[in-house]
Length: 182
Ligand SMILES: [Zn+2]
Ligand SMILES: [Zn+2]
Image (cartoon, rainbow, N blue to C red; front, side):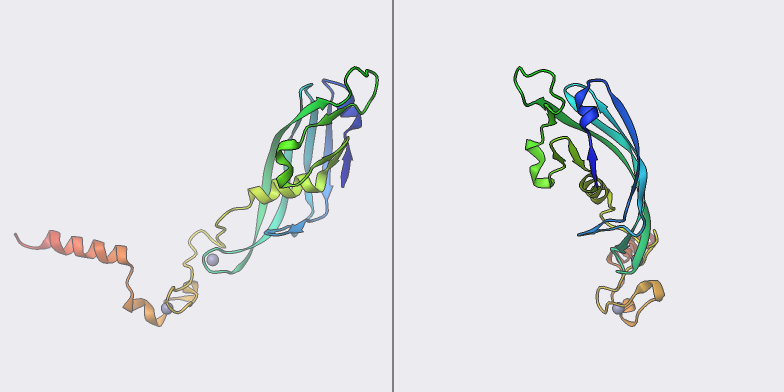
């Protein structure tokens, strides 16, 4: 969705709040399974456009330890500043003279086109960055056995006893030494 910022860009000090209700975005690692809801506030602060607010949705992911499919709510605060520049030197009275100066973040995807903000792209970038790097389908997920690939959440596998956890083995050795008569 394109959001028209013309009235906001036209007057310094203006503030506008808008409700967000966008269809789910699926792009790369980001798979929303519910509409994106929230509220954004735009402020023309003269030298910059301030965008603040909060959006939420639910996302589908894969557990980083056991590869199980999982879903998680995603609530994200938005707090961005985009520098504003006046493109017309000495031509007062025009409404679309002021535009967002976006030169430095072109690589991450263009957000603005004249007075239009690509709201879908802003939400895509914001939600993608907020995805957990190592999602767990539950906090104590036991993961997969490195030797045979068995899902250890279902119980121990046959090869587990042959490969005891090295840290526990070290602890066991330490305890053995402590109880040794000197
Ligand atoms: Zn898991
Ligand atoms: Zn195993």
